[in-house]
Image (cartoon, rainbow, N blue to C red; front, side, top):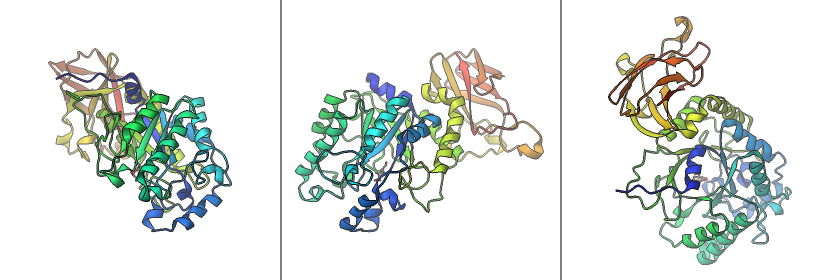
Amino acid sequence: MALPVPAQYVLDFEQMGFGMFVHWGLYSQLGRGEWVYKVENMDMAEYKKLADTFTAEDFDADELVLTAKNAGCRYICFTSRHHEGFSLYDTRGLNDFDVMHTPCGRDLVGEFVDACHRHGISPFLYHTTRDWYNPDFVDNFDRYLDYLYKSVEILCTHYGKIGGFWFDGNSTYRDADWKETRLYSMIRKYQPEAILLNNMGINSKGVVSHPDLDVIPYERGNPRPMNREGMPKYLAAEMCDTINDHWSIGINDFNYKSPARLINNICRCRKAGANYLLNIGPTAEGGVQPYQRELMALIGRWMEIFGEAVYSGRPYGAVSYGAASHLGVHYDSNDERCFILKGEGKLYIFCVNTGIAGDENVTMRSYYCGSYAFDNVPDRVKSVRWMDSGEELSFVQQDDTLVLRVTPQHYGSSFCVRVAEAEI
Ligand code: GLC
């Protein structure tokens, strides 16, 4: 069966590989997550007062964008409006529940998009379709859909080029007619190359609700390599993920993922050809939380060395059966095994948890170095070297099997995922 031909803008999206999600709104002032209104059964008249104290005095769009850029992200998805119904942009008279009617009084979507354009990062906008503020969402759905349409039209026409729209919330009325065709055609008219995604919720990973959409979303999921044969259209995939347990700031959330876990997540998404969209939650005033900035910076140091493999590597059928398993090396799951991606004239060999050279007293001998066998490698390998040090690795290739001699890392480094590039 035929494979669908990808549109260039969808391929470009895939090659961005890694993005930063930003959840920020009035809820950030409470520091208990963006669902606080719903979860705590709050009264909207009370909740609305949060607009009176929204100053955004620490919001610096350049700082936000550079946090992402330094991490190796190539796009940022920013909440123009979340389920609370409050808009971080000037809704130009649609209603007064927007940033212009707060002490802040600045169009923050405008500042965000401009900073992205300045720093060569693609701006995406998260836009809710579920709305707890606008009574029409419950009482007059058609009128609500007009409001949603006009809200998005403003975003399409006042801020220059938008990389993509990330919708979320249709799962409230799963069977309703959301008039998606009307909405998406309008976006296409103004922003022909915007990526369109509609997240159907945590329980609908992999669900694509409309033929105009470009991406298969996997909210906090486990993307699997896709078989695109017979698909009417080429779709990209993306996994969005939290950095701890909340999307927007959770003051008492200590459950951070480790840098190693996050790097692994980037890699396992790329293994399946999916992008990884990692979220941060700015403070009440809009500053990047210092610990989150540092985590992003650490990832960035890894990306500086191995990023090429993340951006250019495409799924490749090769698998390693973990030559190390007989030594009792523990893999948390199949996702932590070694694998190969293919780039221009190259293979990228992702090796997980390889050993450190040095004195046993300090290296713990906890991980394995030695021969790793990969099946399904039809390309003829000419040479292999580590991307970090350039050290050449010896290998044998017979038929479609590649056996690579994995050398230890230098004492002083522990890459968690270390990538070798093979010339083919
Ligand atoms: C869920 C949540 C929402 C969050 C989104 C991010 O759909 O409802 O709060 O923005 O996930 O993927």
